[in-house]
Image (cartoon, rainbow, N blue to C red):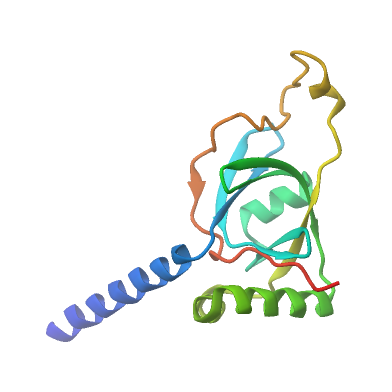
Length: 170
């Protein structure tokens, strides 16, 4: 019985340390949109390659990634700013390696730990600036289902891996 208590305590400590390691570095919120236009906020890590931000999905079965595949227009909440972006997954192994290296450089041991625990078949995602939305250019022109940059973030889902994608050099 005592061993079970010690094991539970160790597991709780590992979980707490993992969470704290993930939150210690830069964490952003990526808003994705479902078919009805409802926003879903996910906390994650991010890297920049040049002027381009990258995130990554640890496991392609994650709900936020499936929403990106269906609707690539997203909002990036970073440094108190909201930016409309277009998410562009890139499955090229060379790009994935470069992104993984950039995440490892920025997030260090925390990235390695999350990778060991959570990452399976990760996919890097480049976040390009979104082209202007003509429906928003007119007063009151927001259409149902369109992302609203002024809207408050939706409740965050569990961190996807706490490690968003980085961009490959070049």
